[in-house]
Amino acid sequence: MADNLVESDIEFVRDVARLGGGSLKKCFQCATCSVVCSLSSDEKPFPRKEMIWAQWGLKDRLLSDPDVWRCYQCGDCSVYCPRGAKPGEVMGAIRNYSFKSYAFPRFMGRLLSSPRYLPLLFAIPGVLFLIVLQHMEALSTVPSGPIAFTRFDNYVDLIFVTVSILVLLATGTGVLKFWKGMDRNNVRGDGYGRIGIGSSVFLAAKEVLTHNNFKKCDANNIRYLGHLSIFYGFAALFIVTSIVFIGLRVFHMDLPMDQTNPIKVLGNLGAVTLIAGCSIAVYNRLGRKEQSGESHYYDWFFLSVLSLIGVTGLLTEVVRLSGNAAAAYWSYFVHLVFVFSLIAYFPYSKFAHLIYRFVAIVYARYAGLDEPAEEMVSGKMGTKSVA
Ligand code: SF4
Ligand code: SF4
Image (tube, rainbow, N blue to C red; front, side, top):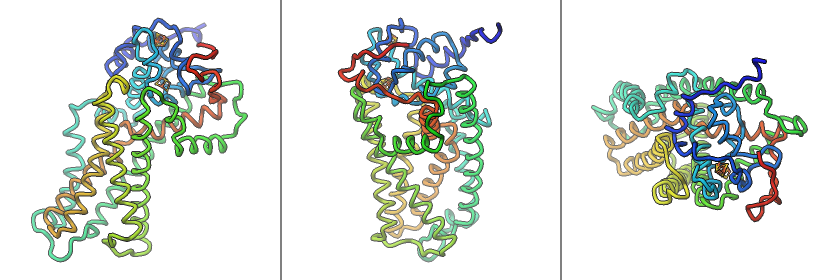
C-alpha cells in the first residue's frame, strides 16, 4: 500500500519556479507540447507528463527521468502551448534543480546555485594560483629571459590533476545516482535491453557528435549553431591541451610552439570557434528572449566562464607575442582562474549537461524509449498519442 503513495514535495515546486519554471501552474494538461516536440517518442511522450509531475511536486520521479535531459530546450513546445505555461523553460528549470541534487559533496551544489557565492568561487583558484605564481616570483619580480609559462608546469599540473581526479569522483557519484534512479523507477519502454549498452553508447555518441536533434528545433534554430560551435571549439581546446600535456611530460616537447604548428593552429581555431559559439548563445538569450526563454544564473555562469576562457587564452598569447612579460604572466594567471572554474565546478554547473544528457540518451536507447515517431510529428500536429 505504502508503495502506491505519491510523495509530493511543495518546496521542490517552489524551487522549480525560482529556477525558471514560474509558468508551471498555467498548464492545463492539454498535451499539445508532447505532440509538437520532435524529440518525444510515441511510446513515452514528453513534456506533458513532466509538467504534471512538476505541478504535483514529484521530485524523485523528475530527478530520475531521462526525458528531462533529452529535451534540448528548443522552445517549440512553449511556442505552441495554448496556456503560456512554457514547458521548455520548466524542463530547463528541472535540469537546473538536478545539478544541485546530484551534487557530491552537497555544499558544492549550493555554492554554484547562487551569485552570492561567486566571489568565493573565483577566490579559491585566485588564491591558489597567486601562491603558485608568486612562489615562482612571476608576478612581483618578472622572471628574466623569454616568457615561458612552462616554468610553472609542475605546480599547475599538480593542481589540475588533483582537481580532475576529484571532479571525476564527484561526477561519477552523481551519474551513478541518476542511473540507479532511472532503473529504480522502472523507466522502461517495450524495447528494454533490445540494444546492448555498447551499442547504446555508440548511438548516443553519434547523436552528440552530429547534434542531429538540435537541427530539429524550429522556434529556436539558432541554438543549433551556437551549441555546435561551443561543442567543437571546446573539443579542439581539450584535444590541444591533452596533446601538450602528454607531449611535455612524455616527449619533452619544446614550447612555445611556432604559430604555424598544426597543434597551435587547432588551438587558436578552437578558441575563436568557442568565442563565436558563446557570442551566438549570448545574442540568442538577450536578443531573442521570446524564442530562447528566460535565462537563469546557471546559464550565465557557464557561458561567462567559457567565453572568458577563450578570450583570456587568446589575450595571453597575443601579450606573450608582444613581449610584455608582466602583462603576459598576469594574463596567464587570470586564464588559469577561469580554466580552474570550468573544470573544478563541472559537476555542479550547467557544464554537467554534457555528461547527464549523454547518460540520459544512452539510457533511453538501452531502455527502448528512444524511438521518435517522426512521421507522426511531421507537420507538427500528428497522431502521436498523449501522456
Ligand atoms: S501545451 Fe501547455 S497547457 Fe498543454 S500540456 Fe503542454 S504545458 Fe500544459
Ligand atoms: S523545448 Fe523542445 S525539445 Fe524540449 S520538450 Fe519542448 S519541444 Fe521538446
